[in-house]
Length: 222
Image (cartoon, rainbow, N blue to C red; front, side, top):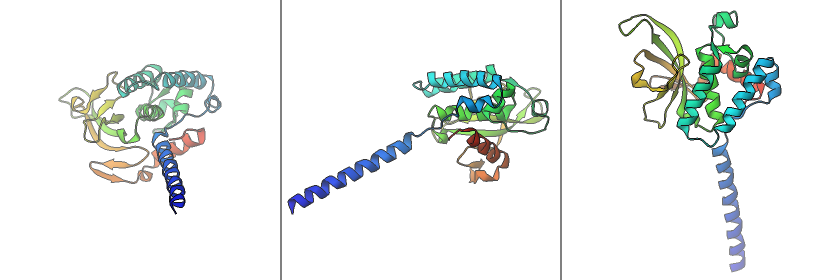
C-alpha cells in the first residue's frame, strides 16, 4: 500500500512538473520574424533593411524595455522615409507589412506603428503593453483647430500607467500628457480593439485583420 502510494505520488509530481513546464513555455513564447527569403520577394532594398533590423533585434534581446523602445523607435524613424500612401502605393490608404515597407524604404504613420509593434513583440515585450493608436493630430500650433488623422504606438509600462508615445514624426518618446497635440480616437493590437474604455473584437478592424494575415503569410508569428 505504501509503495503504491509512493509510485502514485511520483507520477503526480511528474505530471505537475510537465504541466508547469508547458505553461512556462507558453508564457515565454514570443513573436518571431520570417526568413530572409521572404524579404527577398520585395527586392534587394528589403533584404538590406531586413538584415539591419534582424541585427538590431538580436542585439537588443538582453536589453531593458526602455532601451528596446528607444532603439526600435530610432531605427524606423531614421532608416525609413515618411511617405504618404498615394505616393508610395498609388492608393489613398494602404497598410503595409514591415517587409513591404522595407521594399519601398518608405511608409506612412500606420506602417511605422506596425513595424515598431512587431519589433517589440519579437523582443519579448508583452502584447498587453502595446497598442497601435489612431489619433487626431492638431497641426498649425497650440491654438489651431485644424487636425488630421494620424497613428502612433502607445506603450503602457503597467496597465494603469500613463502610456509612452512612439511617433513617426517625433524623434523622442514622450508621455501622453506631453502630447497635447494628439487626441486619441481608438486603439488596437492583435488581441483587441478599444474605443475609450470599451473593448471590442479586433476582427471588426478590416485593414488590421488584412495586414495581420499578410504578415502571417510572410512568416511572422505573433
